[in-house]
Image (cartoon, rainbow, N blue to C red):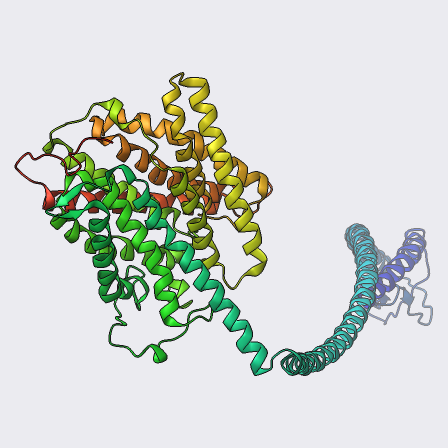
Length: 611
């Protein structure tokens, strides 16, 4: 582009020079006259032609126009005509030269216009050149800025690369350190395992001798045997509570206490042959046991989690079964004959108690064999729900459905007598200690707390019942039911005696003592309206409502202790177990009532006069 501009500039300078020189030469030609000498060649008979060289046409690059006269030897013309022709010829030549000059002047004007157009084009090209120069400058500036940005970006990239490299090095260092730490942890774990093994060996060397281990197992077994003896006091207490009917004839010459012994014997046989397998056999979907231990060698039976012999465990569970059988016998006893009682007792010991107890206690015999309620976390340590509540609500359905088949012989005043005598209450207290102690035979830390809480709850239950009757019932004869509050407190606390504090045990026993008379009033008003059903109403309120409250109290107090906030998941689980117990016992009671319902009215079994 620059070379083109240079060529245009050279042409322009040449044109300018030509424009300056040509006008001066033209003016010199215009100033010449016709008298200027000329070369004339003449002969004797004709005029000699004068040769004049006219200026050549002006063109770019041609020489300037010049007139070169050709001089001949002067001749003096004597003929006038010849002179005239010569003059005319000279005039014609001058005229031709003048026309030629006019043409040259027009050409020069055209050339001047061309030069002006070229100048205009040159100015436009110069302007475009300036604009291009400015654009090139702007582009150069943008390129410089872009170069600076690229340099800055390059520096940032190099800095980031350096940071990444340093971080990579740091990660590699940390990985190496972490690997070293893991190696050290692994080494420490091995050392801890060795130390634990050494400690176990040392403990076994120091305290694990066969003699001491056998002594510990023997003490646990002895403690369970004591709990079994105490547990057997519960059915005896139920037998003593009916002392005034002990001389009554139940069937032929068989008296009341003899019939109770037969019922217990039949109940034990049913439990050992069928019930124990349903209660602690291999669980089927957590609903029922399907194993039987009748034909199994006791030495081949797996010991329980408390490391006691199979026989002792069976006897301990028998105390619960016999208590349930006797409780049903006492509540429904007036409405069924001895034969029907002998049929009812096996149903209680083989089906009613074992099936529900499997849901709650199956893991007590084998920790890997749990019922569905035990699996979800339901807590019933010593039978507040599985024994007391299920049995009482089952007996309520029987008493309610079968009650209209009997003729009333006594007035309501005849039944104002203590449901539990003082002797029976004390025996029930010892039995409750045995129930809880047997279930905690291998946990000596919880045992002391549980035994104290049982005593506190029973005492508070008696005090609460006394206060209720003293404040709301002015009839002094009703104060005899104070022992009922004592038993209600026992029933409620056995659900989780080892899980609550002393103050919480007092609250549980006090509420149970207040619920007992309220429950009696509700049962008498809704279900058990006949006078002879008063003892049944008291027993159902003590064991049915007391057991229900005990299960609820475990959900309220029994997980955290010390009056902490309610553990809602545990509380919901306890309500789930209570609902299952109510549904199960009511359905079972309705089915048995349909089987045993008599079509003919008959006198009550206890139809003798009251001593």
